[in-house]
Each structure stands twice: as structure tokens, then as C-alpha cells.
Length: 119
Image (cartoon, rainbow, N blue to C red; front, side, top):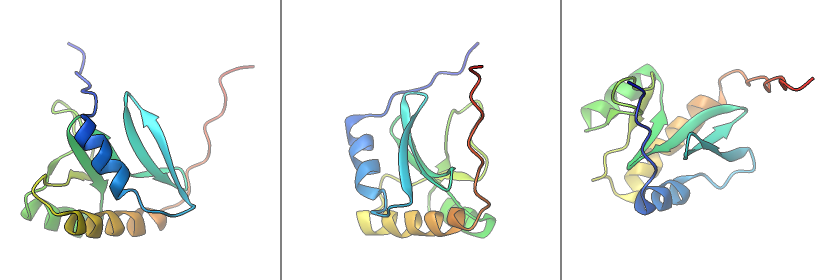
């Protein structure tokens, strides 16, 4: 049975857009009908259905889970290293976690662009 990929709600899309850092290094791209925010080719934040999730260091991932964060992505196969921001978080609380994610992922090696399959 294939995984069900939910579309973002209007609210989750608006929340995602409001939380994306205003930084020239950030690129927002569509991903499987949802959206991802990338720095140096690495996704640091995404929206999946009603959830906005962030990629964090192991310590920050545990801390966010302790604060109510849930797995991010399809229930059958959540994305490793990503945690959904609790919907109860204020904008400033959510922005603090987005800033941690952006700082963490900014330090990772840049991803090389994928080679075109067209010959």
C-alpha cells in the first residue's frame, strides 16, 4: 500500500511561510505537494500536511520532543532527525526552533546539485 502524502492546509502553509527565515541563502521549493526550506541544498524546515517540521541536532531533537514535538513526515516512515513543531507553540517559540534548525543545517556540508537525467 503506497504512503498517503497529505497536502498542506492553508493554515499550515501560511504558518510555514511566516516562519521561513528572511535570509538570501534560503530557498523554498515544492516537495511531494508540500514545501521545504533549504540552505546549501539541505532541507532544514518543511511542511507536511498540517505539520511544520524542523531538522535538529540530536540534543535539540530530544528537547523539542520533550516539549511536545512529534515525528515529522509520513506515519509509516517519519523523517529521521526532523520533529514537528507543536501547534500550541506561539510564533516566537516556533521561530526559536526554526532558528536552531537553520543554524544547525547551515553548518552541514553543502549538497551537490543532482545531475540531470537528460542526455
